[in-house]
Length: 250
Image (cartoon, rainbow, N blue to C red; front, side, top):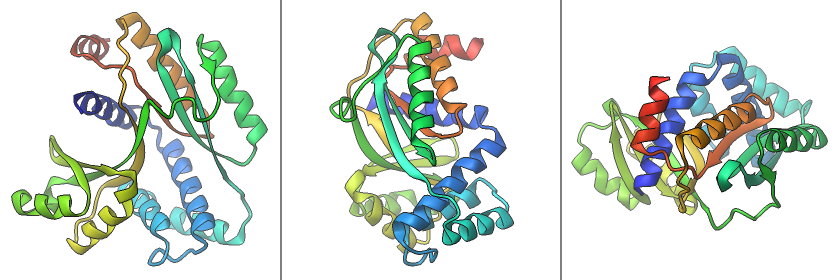
């Protein structure tokens, strides 16, 4: 999982550095909306997906009024969001997986295809990258939420944890897609409040590239993330120490 470690670190640090507050909130509002729609309820006690969305919103310091407005609009059904995904390749065959929430599928398809074309990539068919990415649950937990990690680790493993990493003042807990719900319940039992909970796509087949290609791929990802319909972008580019150091120096 060493490739995952570097990938996830880059993803989180890059997201924290680049995310504009308004765009981050916009993504969370969409997630709240679709959580209400898919879960059939605006009651977080009976809607696990909404509970996660609200915890993430609070963790990002989204104003209470904004959260309440997002729930009200979702209940009223004034906006209809649809989950769509796109799979393709960037320069040098780097796999790119894009997750979107949209209220206009034609617009989103056109925009995503344009980014692939502009950056010398190619949009593939859904399912074409299934062999490259594994869907996992990732929970980011502040260090002060866990008093005794040695004791808590056994409980987390019982809840489905596959890997527990310490990064600065946080613990990163990874579980299988199918164990996402049980891990949520386990954390609730332990009265542990994660800073962020998400389903991600972790590459199991890493692609080695040159620094020049890495720069082109990251520029491509930035372009995707500038699109209001894009929620997440995943890739299988291997972030070597050489590439990470070079990019940090720029």
